[in-house]
Image (cartoon, rainbow, N blue to C red; front, side, top):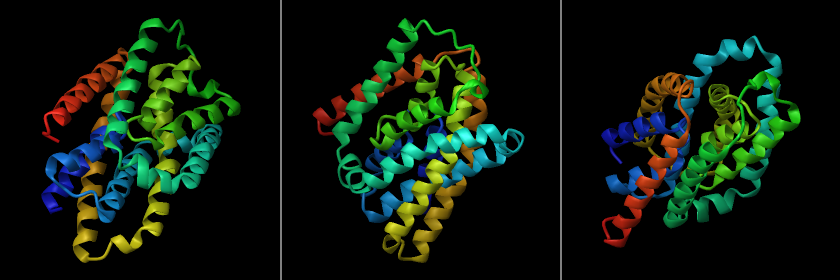
Length: 259
């Protein structure tokens, strides 16, 4: 990987981390398109640059959490199931889920279909805010988020959909997905770097991590603002159609040996 490629990865991460389209899936796809090998450092890199996107959340919504301690507690409750699943299934995630591209494509399309069907047939009124959810509901949302250990599911998508099922409005659902990403991704990043620190071997590796992280931070700021505005007047069906279109294209590309 070179510096330009690291910057591209950072841009992709910044765009996709908070959209319900699976940032991990897009980073894996980007690596394939750029011809970057999925070695030990690459796997660490893809997780580590998520900290840039998380920093964008921290700098944007610090006041929100400072002024609402109750919301902060619910975010931590939602983080617990994901932390447990990530810790217990670490080897499975690294050696199976991150290696099986066709499993990822299948989940990518399946979740897209779920988005469309939910928006079409759901009778929810979406009148609740995140201030209305209980600790039990926050825990359920955390279990939904834990499904995102499978690339293609999308952490943000799982959280947003789970909250919509609880009648929370789309904008607040997205906001909660931003906030719960902070402990989730920080913990995953620290844990993975500690476990795989031997894969960060040179000053060039550190430079690549810095470039990717800075790029993801800058782009994530714009993505956060856009998504909150978009979901005020739109559904998540568009992301469902995007998933189906891209997933179908990738299946065709794989069938003809393009990827």
